[in-house]
Image (cartoon, rainbow, N blue to C red; front, top):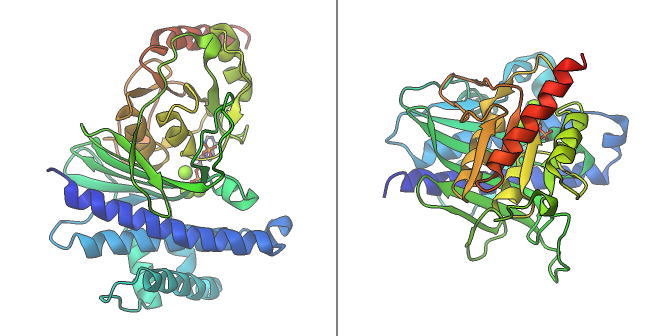
Length: 349
Ligand SMILES: Nc1ncnc2c1ncn2[C@@H]1O[C@H](COP(=O)(O)O)[C@@H](OP(=O)(O)O)[C@H]1O
Ligand SMILES: [Mg+2]
Ligand SMILES: [Mg+2]
Ligand SMILES: [Mg+2]
């Protein structure tokens, strides 16, 4: 089976990174640092997650050339002022590796951690294989104690061939706006998808995997939609105008990170709308894992003009106006509503 080893390594790496992030988020929420808007604990988790994923992928796949496009870099950690943070990250990474319980565990030095972080310097592109990592997607949600995700994907010749999304705070039960009462309030989901093989979800703590599918709603009046919690990341005005044109009745479900793609892939909602403000360029690590999780569940991720997302152009994901995600049945009416709303916006400028 193609990509089988890579898939197993990716799941292991994302699961361990989630363990590291959970530990940091718990400490962050228990202390009062977050209320003083001290961002350093966040940095520790972002770097720690990246170091861990980079280290594990290389360790698990020793016979393959290694290329990783990841969000963070070690620049600040190499400065004098970054030494304490670097020590803290190294401890976290080692503690997490020790908790994995494998005998082959050897303690990493601060230099090993710097090297692992810098393993993420690749530029990606359309040739060969490249891992794509967002070590913490939804940093703002992470700090608030809300949703975030560890998002890891593999590109082969410019196409996403597998994706893993670890969402430590996402309930196992539906979070849709018309959710049914559920007996479970357990949180922590791992979504994973491989090209041609469908999308699966399991509890991050380990459980049997279940195949998931996007919803099959075709009437927009029954649809609900996801968008960023942060209005600075995506225009809430534009999405509400699109929803109104489409006839969506439910209020928006606002959550951080690619947990939106995960929730959509299991039918919690029918639409994800993302319209960054002028001048912002999307990065591939914010969408690569999420897009395959949704498409393998039967959905579709495209730009606002209906073009497929192109991950082959390096770090940036250039899109027309925004990104929309939905099921096949709502695609045409959603594209129409988006077009109308965008035209109105232009003519009102
Ligand atoms: N002005 C902006 N417009 C759109 N997206 C932005 C943005 N500033 C940051 N982002 C991206 O939005 C991501 C979070 O998306 P969401 O709003 O769906 O949670 C961030 O990921 P990180 O948290 O990994 O930095 C960041 O890459
Ligand atoms: Mg991100
Ligand atoms: Mg990030
Ligand atoms: Mg960031």
